[in-house]
Length: 496
Image (cartoon, rainbow, N blue to C red; front, side, top):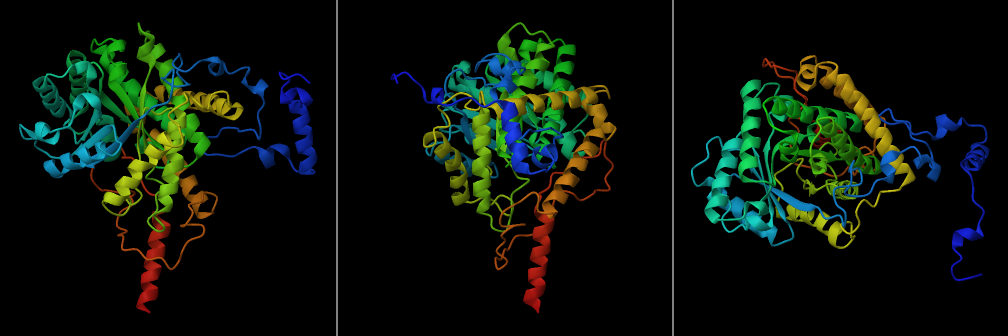
């Protein structure tokens, strides 16, 4: 045997039919499809196994990283992503100090959550003191103040005489996200459209690599939606801006680079990997319909946030394990930026320890697991390529269905989107109660002697009598009802 003889030449190949025949024999009369085909909340048919021939009709499987339709990622070499940490700005100096400390400990992307109703003249300058803006990604998450924050930030960049080509990050203008959660526009729809136009125009003039409009797809995940719904409804939100901004005279090539998507990443490991891959392909196909002049206009920026929906209060350190697999899914799926939710965020303000664990979670995955070294490691996987393709096809059909109803806002006014998500959320809650969805330490292997001082006051599903423009979407924690019942029973037991 020569040195060039491979291991596989020593064995005879096995066909797909032979595989199936052996499986049927092992099943001993049980129904093949009923027993082995996976059932899921996406209504996707997932086979028990795939072979190389199953890739023949999947066009994107032949594409390369960095090329249209970008299903294999935006990067040609490597898989670096921005390691992000967010900070609530309750006191300017304290937020600045925490941000500087995080930058010294491996973070290269900052997010400032700003809820102040009025911003002082020097607010941004004080918040960004000693932060080298040209070396990091800087993001602002604000309460309907994106335009004023952006203007102050641009003034700070000009004041520091920084090359604007080096400034990257985002200011998360998100009127549709506000509408989804609150049921009303922050002001009104026409003002939201005009603000979006002003924001994009300002960015095109001053900050060529900064993003302004955010699509909060994580709202859908945290309300119990299916992955197919996350993909379709977030694509619809983005199309709302594309339609309105092009109607106002902006070119598609000047719009798409100003939009970013924030997706939650859940614990369904392989499905979540496929989600990020499928979305890039869907976005590229959508933007292609607007006939951009440049292929790069079909590239998207996806920010991933680990799930809040499946976090638990009892046995909270299991949240660390959930966040790890969720971060892996986002990284392998090609997310451009990742934020890990601290394990104790469900029941208190995260402390220094939980923030450190959240930060180190993805640093370890990048620096020690080397997930940042290979572009699209999922590429060529028979299962993942087929899952990506079928997921994208199902999401596109749902997208078209909603477009026929008049688009995103009209579908919200008809309660179509809300009812579709509520139906899936109900099925997921039933599956959790029946033990088919497992949260270890909560509905399986609980430590019943564990105590907690957490408060169980609001799970986001309470109905308000306030009149709203649309029925709002209600994020909730899956384990809330079970944990609340357990907490109340423990108190009754203590009283006895």
